Amino acid sequence: MSYDDTEDRKLEQGWKTIIIIWMAMLASLGIYLIVFNLAEIRLNMYFDASLPLDTIRYALYGVSVATLVGVFYLRSYLLDTKRPFKYNQNKTPQHPAVARYSITVIICLALLESIGIYGVVLFLLSGDIGVLYQLIAVSAAGMIYFRPRKEELIALADEITSMT
Image 1 (cartoon, one colour):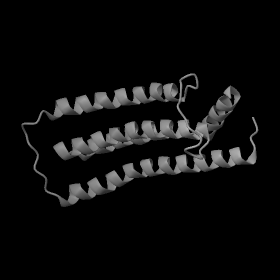
Image 2 (tube, rainbow, N blue to C red):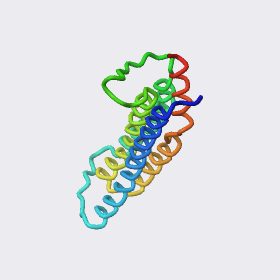
Image 3 (cartoon, helix red, strand yellow):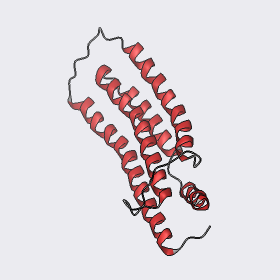
Image 4 (cartoon, helix red, strand yellow):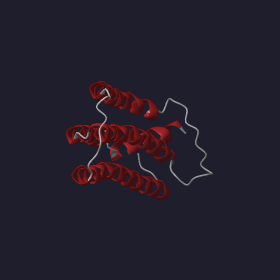
């Protein structure tokens, strides 16, 4: 479907913002790796031997898998145009599709980022840098798999426009 120049500009501007948010969230995982690699080298950390690290590790791995599955379904649910979406065009200059898509992307990225944070927590509890690498890799893979796609935004805009 074709839009007027104003609609195109709103979609393009919104798309650029969404991509910047995605790149920043993905880059933050790299920052975690750099900071905690330096922490492992420079800090002589004390680890409590009485902590049930295996139990905590398996629990956080399970939560990570549940998060990945949850993001898959949550994303579909949030992008469903049959679901009501409150949007006041007078309050924001965004296209309604950009508003809905950016909310979806931010929520999903935050959930995927949490997987990397689980790796940070496990590293701080155990000193095992391998766990940090594993969960950061899972988080990054999720962010790449569920990355924002311009075709999705345009399809959402088409669907919203056809409903009005």
